[in-house]
Length: 546
Image (cartoon, rainbow, N blue to C red; front, top):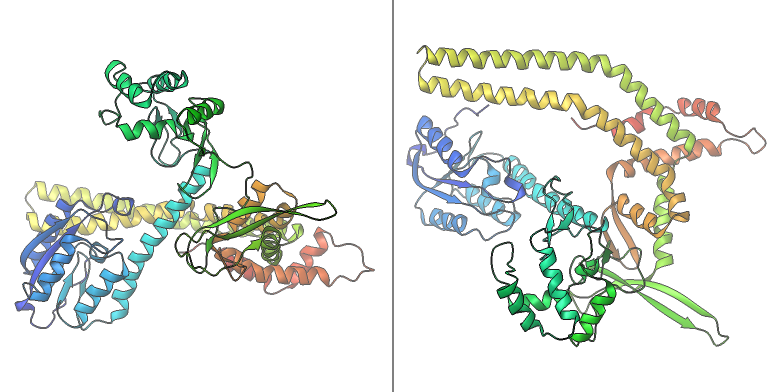
Protein backbone atom coordinates (compact mmCIF):
# COMPACT_ATOMS: atom_id res chain seq x y z
CA UNK A 1 0.00 0.00 0.00
CA UNK A 2 1.31 3.46 -0.91
CA UNK A 3 2.34 5.61 2.05
CA UNK A 4 0.15 8.64 2.72
CA UNK A 5 1.65 11.87 1.36
CA UNK A 6 4.04 13.48 3.81
CA UNK A 7 4.66 17.18 3.35
CA UNK A 8 8.21 18.47 3.50
CA UNK A 9 9.41 22.01 3.89
CA UNK A 10 8.72 24.22 0.84
CA UNK A 11 6.95 21.41 -1.05
CA UNK A 12 5.49 23.99 -3.41
CA UNK A 13 9.00 24.92 -4.58
CA UNK A 14 10.17 21.38 -5.38
CA UNK A 15 10.75 20.42 -8.99
CA UNK A 16 11.32 16.76 -9.74
CA UNK A 17 13.39 14.66 -12.10
CA UNK A 18 11.53 11.47 -12.98
CA UNK A 19 14.25 8.80 -13.19
CA UNK A 20 13.38 5.41 -14.71
CA UNK A 21 15.94 2.63 -15.04
CA UNK A 22 15.95 -1.01 -16.03
CA UNK A 23 18.88 -3.31 -16.69
CA UNK A 24 18.87 -6.24 -19.10
CA UNK A 25 20.81 -8.23 -16.52
CA UNK A 26 19.32 -10.77 -14.10
CA UNK A 27 19.01 -8.18 -11.30
CA UNK A 28 16.03 -6.49 -13.01
CA UNK A 29 14.09 -9.29 -14.65
CA UNK A 30 11.10 -8.78 -12.34
CA UNK A 31 11.13 -4.96 -12.52
CA UNK A 32 8.53 -3.07 -14.54
CA UNK A 33 9.65 -1.83 -17.96
CA UNK A 34 10.95 1.73 -18.30
CA UNK A 35 7.80 2.80 -20.14
CA UNK A 36 5.60 1.28 -17.41
CA UNK A 37 7.64 3.06 -14.74
CA UNK A 38 7.27 6.40 -16.54
CA UNK A 39 3.51 5.98 -16.98
CA UNK A 40 2.84 4.94 -13.38
CA UNK A 41 5.11 7.61 -11.88
CA UNK A 42 3.65 10.31 -14.12
CA UNK A 43 0.17 9.37 -12.86
CA UNK A 44 1.48 9.41 -9.29
CA UNK A 45 2.94 12.91 -9.80
CA UNK A 46 -0.39 14.16 -11.16
CA UNK A 47 -2.32 12.79 -8.18
CA UNK A 48 0.08 14.34 -5.68
CA UNK A 49 0.48 17.61 -7.59
CA UNK A 50 4.22 17.20 -8.13
CA UNK A 51 5.95 19.17 -10.89
CA UNK A 52 8.13 17.04 -13.18
CA UNK A 53 11.01 19.11 -14.60
CA UNK A 54 12.38 16.35 -16.85
CA UNK A 55 12.00 12.63 -17.49
CA UNK A 56 15.33 10.75 -17.49
CA UNK A 57 15.52 7.16 -18.73
CA UNK A 58 18.41 4.72 -18.61
CA UNK A 59 18.98 1.07 -19.56
CA UNK A 60 22.05 0.22 -17.52
CA UNK A 61 22.93 -1.84 -14.44
CA UNK A 62 23.40 0.09 -11.20
CA UNK A 63 25.72 -2.46 -9.59
CA UNK A 64 28.73 -0.25 -10.34
CA UNK A 65 29.18 3.56 -10.44
CA UNK A 66 29.37 5.25 -13.83
CA UNK A 67 25.82 5.49 -15.24
CA UNK A 68 25.83 8.48 -17.64
CA UNK A 69 22.19 9.54 -17.17
CA UNK A 70 22.33 9.10 -13.39
CA UNK A 71 25.52 11.18 -13.18
CA UNK A 72 23.93 13.86 -15.38
CA UNK A 73 20.92 13.97 -13.03
CA UNK A 74 23.17 14.38 -9.97
CA UNK A 75 25.03 17.26 -11.66
CA UNK A 76 21.77 18.98 -12.59
CA UNK A 77 20.48 18.56 -9.02
CA UNK A 78 23.66 20.17 -7.69
CA UNK A 79 23.12 23.08 -10.13
CA UNK A 80 19.59 23.51 -8.77
CA UNK A 81 17.68 22.63 -11.93
CA UNK A 82 15.48 20.46 -9.72
CA UNK A 83 15.51 19.48 -6.06
CA UNK A 84 13.48 16.27 -5.99
CA UNK A 85 13.50 12.81 -7.55
CA UNK A 86 10.60 10.54 -8.50
CA UNK A 87 11.54 6.88 -9.09
CA UNK A 88 9.94 3.44 -8.88
CA UNK A 89 11.98 2.25 -5.87
CA UNK A 90 15.23 3.30 -4.21
CA UNK A 91 17.10 0.45 -5.92
CA UNK A 92 16.39 2.17 -9.26
CA UNK A 93 18.73 4.95 -8.06
CA UNK A 94 21.55 2.83 -6.65
CA UNK A 95 22.69 -0.72 -6.09
CA UNK A 96 26.24 0.21 -5.09
CA UNK A 97 27.49 2.03 -1.96
CA UNK A 98 29.05 4.99 -3.85
CA UNK A 99 25.90 6.08 -5.69
CA UNK A 100 23.75 5.20 -2.69
CA UNK A 101 25.93 7.27 -0.35
CA UNK A 102 25.85 10.21 -2.75
CA UNK A 103 22.04 10.21 -2.92
CA UNK A 104 21.74 9.83 0.86
CA UNK A 105 24.18 12.67 1.53
CA UNK A 106 22.47 15.02 -0.94
CA UNK A 107 19.15 14.33 0.80
CA UNK A 108 20.68 15.05 4.22
CA UNK A 109 22.18 18.38 3.12
CA UNK A 110 18.88 19.18 1.29
CA UNK A 111 20.35 19.41 -2.19
CA UNK A 112 17.56 16.88 -2.70
CA UNK A 113 14.50 17.95 -0.73
CA UNK A 114 12.36 14.92 -1.42
CA UNK A 115 12.57 11.50 -3.03
CA UNK A 116 9.18 10.08 -3.99
CA UNK A 117 8.90 6.40 -4.89
CA UNK A 118 5.74 4.53 -5.83
CA UNK A 119 5.44 3.29 -2.23
CA UNK A 120 7.22 5.77 0.03
CA UNK A 121 8.38 9.36 0.57
CA UNK A 122 11.90 10.20 1.79
CA UNK A 123 12.61 13.61 3.34
CA UNK A 124 15.76 15.26 4.77
CA UNK A 125 14.20 15.14 8.24
CA UNK A 126 13.75 11.34 8.16
CA UNK A 127 15.81 8.94 10.23
CA UNK A 128 18.77 8.08 7.98
CA UNK A 129 18.78 4.46 9.18
CA UNK A 130 15.76 3.38 7.09
CA UNK A 131 17.19 4.71 3.84
CA UNK A 132 20.62 3.28 4.65
CA UNK A 133 19.09 -0.16 5.26
CA UNK A 134 17.13 -0.11 1.99
CA UNK A 135 20.16 1.00 -0.05
CA UNK A 136 22.31 -1.55 1.78
CA UNK A 137 19.83 -4.30 0.93
CA UNK A 138 19.94 -3.29 -2.75
CA UNK A 139 23.76 -3.44 -2.69
CA UNK A 140 23.79 -6.79 -0.86
CA UNK A 141 21.35 -8.22 -3.41
CA UNK A 142 23.81 -7.45 -6.20
CA UNK A 143 26.74 -8.90 -4.21
CA UNK A 144 24.83 -12.11 -3.48
CA UNK A 145 23.71 -12.32 -7.09
CA UNK A 146 27.28 -11.94 -8.35
CA UNK A 147 28.62 -14.53 -5.90
CA UNK A 148 25.84 -16.98 -6.74
CA UNK A 149 26.44 -16.47 -10.45
CA UNK A 150 30.16 -17.19 -10.07
CA UNK A 151 29.41 -20.23 -7.95
CA UNK A 152 26.89 -21.47 -10.52
CA UNK A 153 29.33 -21.05 -13.41
CA UNK A 154 32.10 -22.81 -11.46
CA UNK A 155 29.73 -25.67 -10.61
CA UNK A 156 28.74 -26.01 -14.26
CA UNK A 157 32.41 -26.21 -15.27
CA UNK A 158 33.03 -28.89 -12.65
CA UNK A 159 30.17 -30.90 -14.15
CA UNK A 160 31.96 -30.80 -17.50
CA UNK A 161 30.03 -28.08 -19.35
CA UNK A 162 31.79 -24.90 -20.47
CA UNK A 163 29.70 -22.22 -18.70
CA UNK A 164 29.99 -19.32 -21.12
CA UNK A 165 29.84 -18.91 -24.91
CA UNK A 166 29.96 -21.90 -27.25
CA UNK A 167 32.81 -22.00 -29.74
CA UNK A 168 32.21 -22.29 -33.48
CA UNK A 169 30.77 -25.69 -34.39
CA UNK A 170 28.85 -26.13 -31.14
CA UNK A 171 25.56 -24.84 -29.73
CA UNK A 172 23.58 -24.87 -26.48
CA UNK A 173 20.72 -27.33 -26.20
CA UNK A 174 17.79 -24.91 -26.10
CA UNK A 175 15.42 -27.59 -24.82
CA UNK A 176 17.09 -27.39 -21.41
CA UNK A 177 16.39 -24.62 -18.91
CA UNK A 178 18.93 -21.91 -18.16
CA UNK A 179 21.93 -23.19 -16.19
CA UNK A 180 21.47 -26.71 -17.54
CA UNK A 181 21.94 -26.05 -21.27
CA UNK A 182 24.24 -28.83 -22.39
CA UNK A 183 26.60 -28.21 -25.30
CA UNK A 184 25.72 -30.13 -28.45
CA UNK A 185 26.95 -30.22 -32.05
CA UNK A 186 25.80 -27.29 -34.17
CA UNK A 187 24.05 -29.10 -37.06
CA UNK A 188 24.87 -26.26 -39.48
CA UNK A 189 28.55 -25.78 -38.67
CA UNK A 190 30.04 -28.83 -36.89
CA UNK A 191 30.98 -30.74 -40.07
CA UNK A 192 32.29 -27.60 -41.76
CA UNK A 193 34.63 -26.79 -38.88
CA UNK A 194 35.69 -30.45 -38.78
CA UNK A 195 36.57 -30.11 -42.49
CA UNK A 196 38.88 -27.21 -41.61
CA UNK A 197 40.73 -29.40 -39.11
CA UNK A 198 41.02 -32.16 -41.71
CA UNK A 199 42.56 -29.73 -44.20
CA UNK A 200 45.02 -28.53 -41.56
CA UNK A 201 46.01 -32.11 -40.65
CA UNK A 202 47.10 -32.83 -44.26
CA UNK A 203 49.94 -30.35 -43.82
CA UNK A 204 49.27 -29.03 -47.33
CA UNK A 205 47.41 -25.86 -46.38
CA UNK A 206 48.19 -22.77 -44.33
CA UNK A 207 45.55 -21.35 -41.96
CA UNK A 208 45.00 -18.45 -44.40
CA UNK A 209 44.34 -20.87 -47.27
CA UNK A 210 41.92 -22.87 -45.10
CA UNK A 211 40.17 -19.63 -44.15
CA UNK A 212 39.57 -18.77 -47.82
CA UNK A 213 38.28 -22.29 -48.55
CA UNK A 214 35.95 -22.22 -45.53
CA UNK A 215 34.62 -18.78 -46.46
CA UNK A 216 34.32 -19.03 -50.23
CA UNK A 217 33.82 -22.75 -50.96
CA UNK A 218 32.21 -24.12 -47.79
CA UNK A 219 30.20 -20.97 -47.05
CA UNK A 220 31.03 -21.11 -43.34
CA UNK A 221 29.70 -18.19 -41.30
CA UNK A 222 29.43 -17.43 -37.60
CA UNK A 223 26.07 -17.57 -35.81
CA UNK A 224 25.81 -13.83 -36.37
CA UNK A 225 26.21 -14.39 -40.12
CA UNK A 226 29.72 -12.91 -40.35
CA UNK A 227 32.80 -14.30 -42.06
CA UNK A 228 35.50 -15.85 -39.85
CA UNK A 229 38.33 -13.44 -39.15
CA UNK A 230 42.01 -14.25 -39.60
CA UNK A 231 42.67 -14.11 -35.87
CA UNK A 232 39.71 -16.39 -35.20
CA UNK A 233 41.04 -19.15 -37.45
CA UNK A 234 44.17 -19.36 -35.28
CA UNK A 235 42.07 -19.33 -32.12
CA UNK A 236 40.06 -22.27 -33.44
CA UNK A 237 43.17 -24.32 -34.29
CA UNK A 238 44.68 -23.73 -30.81
CA UNK A 239 41.49 -24.19 -28.75
CA UNK A 240 41.71 -27.34 -26.61
CA UNK A 241 37.90 -27.36 -26.33
CA UNK A 242 37.80 -29.12 -29.71
CA UNK A 243 39.57 -32.20 -28.32
CA UNK A 244 37.49 -32.28 -25.14
CA UNK A 245 39.11 -30.18 -22.38
CA UNK A 246 38.76 -26.55 -21.34
CA UNK A 247 40.20 -24.06 -18.86
CA UNK A 248 37.84 -22.06 -16.65
CA UNK A 249 38.20 -19.25 -15.87
CA UNK A 250 40.67 -18.44 -18.63
CA UNK A 251 44.19 -18.13 -17.23
CA UNK A 252 43.25 -19.71 -13.89
CA UNK A 253 45.04 -23.01 -14.46
CA UNK A 254 41.84 -24.94 -13.70
CA UNK A 255 41.25 -27.54 -16.40
CA UNK A 256 38.19 -29.71 -16.85
CA UNK A 257 37.24 -32.72 -18.95
CA UNK A 258 34.29 -31.62 -21.08
CA UNK A 259 31.19 -33.74 -21.54
CA UNK A 260 30.61 -32.38 -25.04
CA UNK A 261 31.44 -34.54 -28.07
CA UNK A 262 35.04 -33.79 -29.17
CA UNK A 263 35.55 -32.73 -32.78
CA UNK A 264 39.13 -34.04 -32.97
CA UNK A 265 41.37 -36.36 -30.94
CA UNK A 266 44.16 -35.20 -28.67
CA UNK A 267 46.70 -36.69 -31.09
CA UNK A 268 45.21 -34.65 -33.94
CA UNK A 269 45.31 -31.53 -31.77
CA UNK A 270 48.98 -32.12 -30.92
CA UNK A 271 49.87 -32.59 -34.58
CA UNK A 272 48.16 -29.29 -35.47
CA UNK A 273 50.14 -27.49 -32.75
CA UNK A 274 53.31 -28.95 -34.24
CA UNK A 275 52.32 -27.80 -37.74
CA UNK A 276 51.59 -24.32 -36.37
CA UNK A 277 55.02 -24.24 -34.75
CA UNK A 278 53.61 -24.01 -31.23
CA UNK A 279 56.17 -24.94 -28.61
CA UNK A 280 53.71 -24.94 -25.73
CA UNK A 281 50.37 -26.72 -25.86
CA UNK A 282 47.40 -25.29 -23.94
CA UNK A 283 46.37 -28.55 -22.36
CA UNK A 284 46.03 -29.63 -18.72
CA UNK A 285 49.04 -30.72 -16.76
CA UNK A 286 49.39 -34.36 -15.81
CA UNK A 287 48.78 -33.60 -12.13
CA UNK A 288 45.35 -32.44 -10.92
CA UNK A 289 45.41 -30.40 -7.71
CA UNK A 290 42.45 -31.07 -5.44
CA UNK A 291 41.80 -27.58 -4.05
CA UNK A 292 43.08 -25.31 -6.81
CA UNK A 293 40.50 -22.75 -7.90
CA UNK A 294 38.56 -22.80 -4.62
CA UNK A 295 40.58 -20.30 -2.57
CA UNK A 296 41.77 -16.72 -2.82
CA UNK A 297 44.61 -14.85 -1.17
CA UNK A 298 43.54 -13.05 2.00
CA UNK A 299 46.11 -10.30 1.40
CA UNK A 300 45.73 -9.29 -2.25
CA UNK A 301 42.64 -11.19 -3.43
CA UNK A 302 44.36 -13.12 -6.21
CA UNK A 303 43.54 -16.78 -6.81
CA UNK A 304 45.41 -19.51 -4.92
CA UNK A 305 47.22 -21.94 -7.19
CA UNK A 306 49.20 -25.12 -6.49
CA UNK A 307 52.41 -26.79 -7.55
CA UNK A 308 54.15 -30.07 -6.88
CA UNK A 309 57.68 -30.25 -5.48
CA UNK A 310 59.91 -33.31 -5.58
CA UNK A 311 62.62 -33.79 -2.98
CA UNK A 312 65.29 -36.44 -3.54
CA UNK A 313 67.29 -37.56 -0.55
CA UNK A 314 70.90 -38.75 -0.68
CA UNK A 315 69.79 -42.27 0.24
CA UNK A 316 67.70 -42.39 -2.94
CA UNK A 317 64.28 -41.82 -1.37
CA UNK A 318 61.95 -39.51 -3.28
CA UNK A 319 59.22 -37.44 -1.57
CA UNK A 320 56.40 -35.58 -3.30
CA UNK A 321 54.87 -32.44 -1.76
CA UNK A 322 51.98 -30.26 -2.93
CA UNK A 323 52.06 -26.59 -1.98
CA UNK A 324 49.35 -23.94 -2.34
CA UNK A 325 50.27 -20.28 -2.78
CA UNK A 326 49.08 -16.94 -4.15
CA UNK A 327 49.45 -16.46 -7.92
CA UNK A 328 50.50 -12.83 -7.19
CA UNK A 329 48.82 -11.73 -10.41
CA UNK A 330 47.12 -8.80 -8.71
CA UNK A 331 50.00 -7.76 -6.45
CA UNK A 332 53.44 -9.08 -7.44
CA UNK A 333 54.80 -8.07 -4.04
CA UNK A 334 52.23 -10.13 -2.06
CA UNK A 335 53.95 -11.44 1.09
CA UNK A 336 51.89 -14.56 1.74
CA UNK A 337 53.84 -17.81 2.15
CA UNK A 338 53.07 -21.27 0.80
CA UNK A 339 51.14 -23.91 2.74
CA UNK A 340 51.54 -27.65 2.26
CA UNK A 341 48.45 -29.61 1.24
CA UNK A 342 48.64 -31.87 4.32
CA UNK A 343 48.58 -28.84 6.64
CA UNK A 344 45.64 -27.38 4.68
CA UNK A 345 43.73 -30.65 5.03
CA UNK A 346 44.54 -30.78 8.75
CA UNK A 347 42.85 -27.39 9.18
CA UNK A 348 39.79 -28.56 7.22
CA UNK A 349 39.55 -31.70 9.38
CA UNK A 350 39.71 -29.54 12.50
CA UNK A 351 36.71 -27.52 11.28
CA UNK A 352 34.80 -30.68 10.31
CA UNK A 353 35.58 -32.22 13.70
CA UNK A 354 33.95 -29.29 15.47
CA UNK A 355 30.62 -29.80 13.70
CA UNK A 356 30.67 -33.62 13.61
CA UNK A 357 27.68 -35.29 15.31
CA UNK A 358 27.12 -38.99 16.15
CA UNK A 359 24.84 -41.11 13.99
CA UNK A 360 22.46 -41.67 16.92
CA UNK A 361 21.89 -37.95 17.41
CA UNK A 362 21.44 -37.35 13.66
CA UNK A 363 18.68 -39.98 13.47
CA UNK A 364 17.02 -38.69 16.64
CA UNK A 365 17.13 -35.03 15.58
CA UNK A 366 15.61 -35.74 12.15
CA UNK A 367 12.90 -37.86 13.78
CA UNK A 368 12.09 -35.02 16.21
CA UNK A 369 11.91 -32.47 13.41
CA UNK A 370 9.54 -34.64 11.39
CA UNK A 371 7.39 -35.22 14.49
CA UNK A 372 7.15 -31.48 15.10
CA UNK A 373 6.31 -30.98 11.45
CA UNK A 374 3.41 -33.45 11.73
CA UNK A 375 2.10 -31.67 14.82
CA UNK A 376 2.04 -28.36 12.99
CA UNK A 377 0.52 -29.80 9.80
CA UNK A 378 -3.07 -29.16 10.90
CA UNK A 379 -2.23 -25.60 11.93
CA UNK A 380 -0.61 -24.94 8.55
CA UNK A 381 -3.61 -26.49 6.82
CA UNK A 382 -5.88 -24.07 8.65
CA UNK A 383 -3.65 -21.11 7.80
CA UNK A 384 -3.56 -22.13 4.14
CA UNK A 385 -7.35 -22.47 4.09
CA UNK A 386 -7.77 -18.98 5.56
CA UNK A 387 -5.28 -17.52 3.06
CA UNK A 388 -7.09 -19.20 0.15
CA UNK A 389 -10.41 -17.79 1.41
CA UNK A 390 -8.99 -14.27 1.55
CA UNK A 391 -7.42 -14.71 -1.90
CA UNK A 392 -10.78 -15.78 -3.36
CA UNK A 393 -12.47 -12.80 -1.72
CA UNK A 394 -9.90 -10.51 -3.34
CA UNK A 395 -10.60 -12.04 -6.78
CA UNK A 396 -14.32 -11.45 -6.31
CA UNK A 397 -13.64 -7.83 -5.34
CA UNK A 398 -11.65 -7.34 -8.54
CA UNK A 399 -14.47 -8.87 -10.60
CA UNK A 400 -17.02 -6.57 -8.92
CA UNK A 401 -14.77 -3.57 -9.49
CA UNK A 402 -14.56 -4.35 -13.22
CA UNK A 403 -18.38 -4.65 -13.37
CA UNK A 404 -18.77 -1.32 -11.56
CA UNK A 405 -16.47 0.40 -14.05
CA UNK A 406 -18.26 -1.23 -17.00
CA UNK A 407 -21.61 0.02 -15.65
CA UNK A 408 -20.26 3.55 -15.11
CA UNK A 409 -20.73 3.38 -11.34
CA UNK A 410 -17.19 4.66 -10.67
CA UNK A 411 -14.81 6.99 -12.53
CA UNK A 412 -11.65 5.83 -14.29
CA UNK A 413 -9.45 7.39 -11.56
CA UNK A 414 -11.41 5.59 -8.84
CA UNK A 415 -11.12 2.36 -10.82
CA UNK A 416 -7.34 2.69 -11.19
CA UNK A 417 -6.85 3.53 -7.50
CA UNK A 418 -8.93 0.61 -6.22
CA UNK A 419 -7.52 -1.79 -8.80
CA UNK A 420 -3.94 -0.96 -7.77
CA UNK A 421 -4.72 -1.67 -4.12
CA UNK A 422 -6.58 -4.90 -4.91
CA UNK A 423 -3.82 -6.19 -7.21
CA UNK A 424 -1.24 -5.55 -4.50
CA UNK A 425 -3.45 -7.41 -2.04
CA UNK A 426 -3.89 -10.29 -4.52
CA UNK A 427 -0.14 -10.57 -5.11
CA UNK A 428 0.44 -10.52 -1.35
CA UNK A 429 -1.90 -13.48 -0.80
CA UNK A 430 -0.36 -15.34 -3.75
CA UNK A 431 3.09 -15.03 -2.20
CA UNK A 432 1.82 -16.18 1.21
CA UNK A 433 0.08 -19.19 -0.34
CA UNK A 434 3.15 -20.21 -2.32
CA UNK A 435 5.28 -19.81 0.80
CA UNK A 436 2.89 -21.85 2.95
CA UNK A 437 2.80 -24.67 0.41
CA UNK A 438 6.46 -25.61 0.32
CA UNK A 439 8.50 -23.56 2.80
CA UNK A 440 8.36 -26.02 5.69
CA UNK A 441 8.92 -29.04 3.42
CA UNK A 442 12.03 -27.39 2.00
CA UNK A 443 13.15 -26.55 5.52
CA UNK A 444 12.84 -30.18 6.67
CA UNK A 445 14.78 -31.38 3.61
CA UNK A 446 17.46 -28.76 4.19
CA UNK A 447 17.71 -29.64 7.89
CA UNK A 448 18.16 -33.33 7.06
CA UNK A 449 20.81 -32.44 4.50
CA UNK A 450 22.74 -30.38 7.06
CA UNK A 451 22.56 -33.03 9.78
CA UNK A 452 23.74 -35.73 7.37
CA UNK A 453 26.61 -33.53 6.24
CA UNK A 454 27.69 -32.87 9.84
CA UNK A 455 27.52 -36.62 10.53
CA UNK A 456 29.50 -37.88 7.53
CA UNK A 457 31.73 -35.07 6.27
CA UNK A 458 34.78 -35.68 8.48
CA UNK A 459 34.98 -39.42 7.77
CA UNK A 460 34.32 -38.90 4.07
CA UNK A 461 37.03 -36.23 3.91
CA UNK A 462 39.52 -38.63 5.57
CA UNK A 463 38.70 -41.67 3.44
CA UNK A 464 37.07 -40.37 0.25
CA UNK A 465 38.44 -39.46 -3.14
CA UNK A 466 40.04 -36.16 -4.11
CA UNK A 467 36.72 -35.17 -5.68
CA UNK A 468 34.95 -35.94 -2.36
CA UNK A 469 37.38 -33.75 -0.43
CA UNK A 470 37.00 -30.89 -2.89
CA UNK A 471 33.21 -31.14 -2.76
CA UNK A 472 33.18 -31.12 1.07
CA UNK A 473 35.42 -28.06 1.29
CA UNK A 474 33.16 -26.24 -1.19
CA UNK A 475 30.04 -27.19 0.82
CA UNK A 476 31.47 -25.90 4.11
CA UNK A 477 30.89 -22.30 3.15
CA UNK A 478 31.97 -19.47 0.90
CA UNK A 479 34.75 -16.88 0.65
CA UNK A 480 37.62 -19.33 1.18
CA UNK A 481 40.83 -17.36 1.77
CA UNK A 482 44.38 -18.17 2.81
CA UNK A 483 46.29 -15.69 4.94
CA UNK A 484 49.19 -16.32 7.29
CA UNK A 485 49.10 -19.99 6.25
CA UNK A 486 45.65 -20.22 7.80
CA UNK A 487 42.45 -21.20 5.99
CA UNK A 488 39.52 -18.85 6.61
CA UNK A 489 35.98 -19.87 5.64
CA UNK A 490 32.67 -18.04 5.94
CA UNK A 491 30.95 -21.19 7.18
CA UNK A 492 27.23 -21.53 6.43
CA UNK A 493 25.16 -20.20 9.34
CA UNK A 494 23.37 -23.49 10.13
CA UNK A 495 26.73 -25.26 10.43
CA UNK A 496 28.11 -22.51 12.67
CA UNK A 497 25.13 -22.84 15.00
CA UNK A 498 25.32 -26.63 14.87
CA UNK A 499 28.86 -26.50 16.29
CA UNK A 500 27.62 -25.79 19.82
CA UNK A 501 25.04 -28.55 19.53
CA UNK A 502 27.81 -30.93 18.45
CA UNK A 503 29.79 -30.08 21.60
CA UNK A 504 26.78 -30.83 23.79
CA UNK A 505 26.11 -34.16 22.04
CA UNK A 506 29.74 -35.22 22.38
CA UNK A 507 29.64 -34.27 26.04
CA UNK A 508 26.56 -36.48 26.55
CA UNK A 509 28.30 -39.43 24.95
CA UNK A 510 31.44 -38.92 27.03
CA UNK A 511 29.44 -39.08 30.30
CA UNK A 512 28.95 -42.82 29.94
CA UNK A 513 31.41 -44.65 32.20
CA UNK A 514 33.82 -47.09 30.53
CA UNK A 515 32.43 -50.04 32.48
CA UNK A 516 28.83 -49.33 31.39
CA UNK A 517 27.16 -51.03 28.38
CA UNK A 518 27.78 -49.27 25.05
CA UNK A 519 25.44 -46.40 24.23
CA UNK A 520 22.49 -47.45 22.06
CA UNK A 521 19.60 -45.61 20.40
CA UNK A 522 17.30 -45.89 23.40
CA UNK A 523 19.82 -44.72 25.98
CA UNK A 524 21.07 -41.92 23.73
CA UNK A 525 17.54 -40.63 23.09
CA UNK A 526 16.86 -40.61 26.82
CA UNK A 527 19.99 -38.56 27.40
CA UNK A 528 19.13 -36.10 24.63
CA UNK A 529 15.68 -35.55 26.13
CA UNK A 530 17.27 -34.87 29.51
CA UNK A 531 19.29 -32.01 27.98
CA UNK A 532 17.05 -28.90 28.21
CA UNK A 533 18.92 -27.12 25.43
CA UNK A 534 18.98 -29.88 22.83
CA UNK A 535 15.65 -29.60 21.04
CA UNK A 536 15.55 -25.85 21.48
CA UNK A 537 18.97 -25.41 19.91
CA UNK A 538 18.61 -27.69 16.94
CA UNK A 539 15.17 -26.23 16.23
CA UNK A 540 16.34 -22.60 16.41
CA UNK A 541 19.47 -23.36 14.38
CA UNK A 542 17.49 -24.57 11.37
CA UNK A 543 14.10 -22.88 11.73
CA UNK A 544 12.91 -21.42 8.41
CA UNK A 545 12.96 -17.67 8.20
CA UNK A 546 9.59 -15.90 8.11
